[in-house]
Length: 80
Length: 271
Image 1: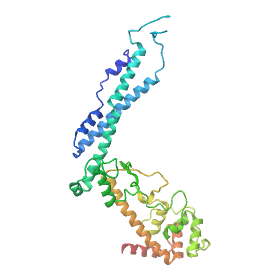
Image 2 (image 1 turned 90 degrees about the vertical axis):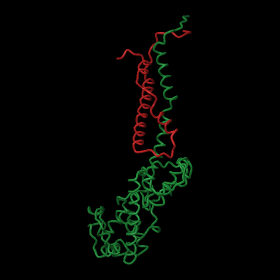
Image 3 (image 1 turned 30 degrees about the horizontal axis):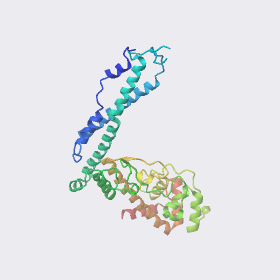
Image 4 (image 1 turned 90 degrees about the horizontal axis):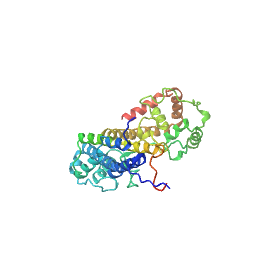
């Protein structure tokens, strides 16, 4: 098991901005009359797939945190 | 009382910071909203590709904008134009959606053309074409015989008994008006316009050239199917006893007693 803390594991991931956000910005800037080529459509479908995969991964990480059992802290909170 | 101010984050602090990081990722970047936006843009673009492929001249002449405008508010004016073209030139698409301007048409359903009989079993014989009403003797015999007695004075006891199941070849015989009728009543023609009903969950279709062309062909085929059945209506009106005897024979054996009638009918069809 890794000795890294959870925040270290998360920040070490080679994640970037979700590609759907970048593509959404690109789409917003383009003229709607410019019809997408077949290649563009294939690229868009791939980016939607990758974007969903990243969203699902983050949701799974959040769910895993929710399931984490409580453990005693070494620190005593102020007031106790 | 012990008072302690922690300087190191510890496990709890680490966990809270991680949760905050993840919530920032999901909330601030809002990838889900971006994905929805791309998905709807892509769906519109796929419709434009279809529009250009199927109606190239109309596409060139079109003055419709690419912004949301038109009867169906979720779609661009150009997409609304495509819906109308498909409805006018291919098959009835909008009839069932027109009352709902907010309708989601990214996938669409078709309106059943053979909806007189469904799993509800509530059939009003008076409003059925006569051939269809006769075909119901295999499904709802009591009601069908009562109707035939009332309409033509035909009594069940005067006819051969009907096997519980149709002959194994029935349903696969080509060029037979009786086969067509039984398949129509049974909703087993293989044509989506004729086999779907309002009672069962409908099939959803996507906007692709293949789908639109296939549904167009099947719609025309369904109309021709009804035209063939109409030919049987006149034969029944002329000689109900003979046709009903033939039809029962066909159900039981896969062969009509009097093949001449079927062949005469086929000849009429060809003409």
